[in-house]
Image 1: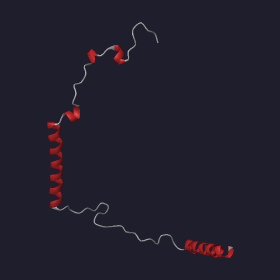
Image 2 (image 1 turned 90 degrees about the horizontal axis):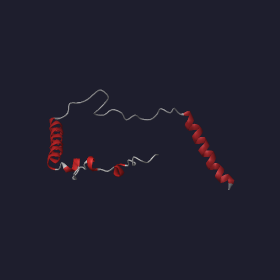
Image 3 (image 1 turned 120 degrees about the horizontal axis):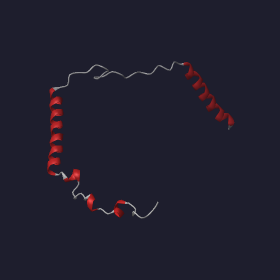
Length: 99
């Protein structure tokens, strides 16, 4: 049984030993393509028009909802008046007590 296991170990060791002798920079580089560093192409007119249309739609959506649903931003409840709060609600101890 040890001989059958030893054969596999010897194969793996010899494979690793021969692989270490080959140069490591044999990989293929897949660089390049339509966009490269400091090299841009001119966008199509359709792309420019679609970007402008999407931006306009986004700003229309934001401004429309800020005008008609302003309560979502500032809240839909009246803000409490700070003059009507008591010292106990604010966490201020009574004047006669020492710390």
